[in-house]
Amino acid sequence: MAPLLQLKHVVKRFGGLVATHDVSFDVEENETVFIIGPNGAGKTTLFNLISGYLTADSGEILYRGQNLVGMKPYQTTRLGIGRTFQIVKPLPSLTVRENVMLGSFLHHHSWPEASRKADEVLDFFGLARRADQLASGLPLAQRKLLEVARALATGAKLLLLDEVMAGLNPTESAEVVALLKRLTGFGVSAVAGVEHIMRVVMALATRVVVMDQGAKLAEGPPQTVVHDPRVVEAYLGSKYSQGGAQR
Amino acid sequence: MRRWLPALVFFALLVSLPLWLKDAYLQQIVFRVVIFAVLGIAWNLVGGYAGQLSLGHVAYFGIGAYSVALFHEHFELNPWLGTVLGVVLACLAALLIGSLTFRLRGPYFALSTIAAAEILRLLALNLSFTHGAIGMIAPAFFAEPNGDTKTYYAALPLLLLAFAVATYTHRSRFGYYLRAIRENEDTAMAVGVNPAVEKLKALLLSAALVAAAGALYAGVFQFIGPDSVLTVDLSVQMALIAMLGGVATVWGPIIGAVVLTVAAEGLKAYLERAHLFFYGLLLVLVVLFLPGGLVSITKLRWFRRSAARAQAG
Image 1: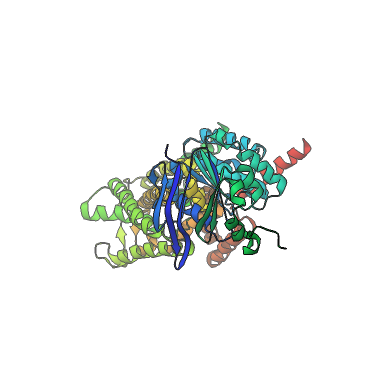
Image 2: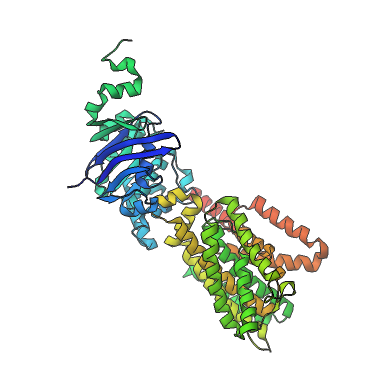
């Protein structure tokens, strides 16, 4: 079977800066692929290209065989690609339930149905208690969950999570990891994440794609990738990549 | 059922008004309240729910008013047909103005809507078939006697329609999509909303209501000109009505229309030349102390009471 998502030689330039250079990788069904890499490696750009917030200069991005390049964000959402934002964007003047309803309205046009679907999702994320509160009153960890909940409520098959764990303390992120492991229950076929916290990556990823300066540096199972000398060099500098602890 | 009680009382009051309010001047004020309530509700769809600060809504009002007069003078059409054509023309204008101005954000959008309305005003001022600054005579919708009262009864269904649109918008997918666009277009797109399409839908609905109100207004005042139905003041007033009452609420524009019209007329009657000062003062006080508009007073009390109850229980 063809992969759910295929990136083929994707290039994006901002003026003279090449943000992603000839990036290719696949996301298969039932996979959780994490994209890691130092700041400025082009991870979020990649997500913006997939979800349609940016348009690739060349290359192909295929979702179930359909080319996404040139599509608008709302079109990719309607196809089944849900995303969260690195900087959380809940709608502060709406309640928590209403925020999630914005997602569920995509496939449930009537108010009561959208509301019921939203409650289902909120229940899963342990936010049911907060449903009638304004989203602006939520603490960061729950605002982050709300982002995932809203994306999930659109009925997304492919979920793009942009640094969901950033800013969470270890206890909180352990809770979120436990939740993300059960996402398939909501019909999610695959997850692609951008993440800096390696503990989270190691716990969730079935495969890791390493980016550095806009290009794909390495790809493979998490255990293999983190010991790849090139990856260690990109993160820590060449001193550490020559096999060792030379102070 | 209790949800509909305020609306029922309100409309019953409006229907019965001409029966016990015989003074022609006061009746005219009530007619203005109804027309301005329609305008406020219509503006609220675009400016309140969708958060697009339009200051050019008078364009659609003018198209409605001028259509009644123009089609009557040049094609001898009755004002009802003129109204229908005015609504259609306003929708076409909204399509054109919207697709151009919605590309801009924030203050640039507001300025471009003013520009669009000003183009229409200048056209009306300079074209020969609109008689320029002299203005036009608009036909009455109903023959005397009691023509104005009959037109008032024709305006009530329009207000009811506007109210129904507002109520629907407030609790529907469409309304939530507009709110999402207002708060953050990126998030809106992430949940599958096409902002351009939803904004245009809101503007079309809004323009149709405003044009119908403009046509009825012309029918009652019977004399229209660029400075009465295409002036930027009227655009500002539509925005003020919604803001004073409470943006993105169903009742806000209605309350705003009542307070603003009654205040304007009352102050004018008792304070003569000082009325504009107090009119301004009223606006400043509301903006300062009730940024959510007049409807937020009830919300505050309700909030306090339920909070007190929660503490006690």
